[in-house]
Length: 183
Image (tube, rainbow, N blue to C red; front, side, top):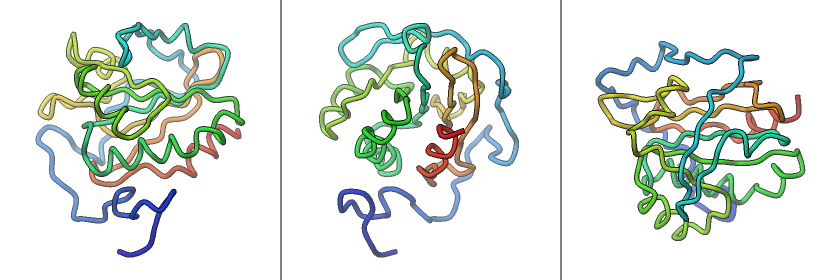
């Protein structure tokens, strides 16, 4: 695959087109989502990279992209994180917060965010392990990680869209975020 993505990043960092990985306990064709569009998003309180608690309530007043990321420091996850950072101004113009959530420690998230120059919150759903990911129906017990899913919330904390990748090695499409936030 040739070409470049945002800011000259190789496209393979954004969308790996390798054969799908079969994950124990996860059927990518079956929806594990328990949250339906129109429902209130489950409340949470998670530490950011500075150990400050971020709550769903603190995000109200703006639209929000809750971006669940499987694994820090991996190519597809890093590509998605960086694509959101590079487009942060555009997302803010649409009135949206961006919040990433991993099931890794805040220390790992901090190192990852600093390495990649990420300015938006990266939250740790590490302990109790995956509790928020489970509440959103995206936790994979076999992997101990959240699956690649994004919940688009309105200013009142209700789910207006769900964007996910059917394969763990394939990034979500950034254009889907723009479409969801424009509606």
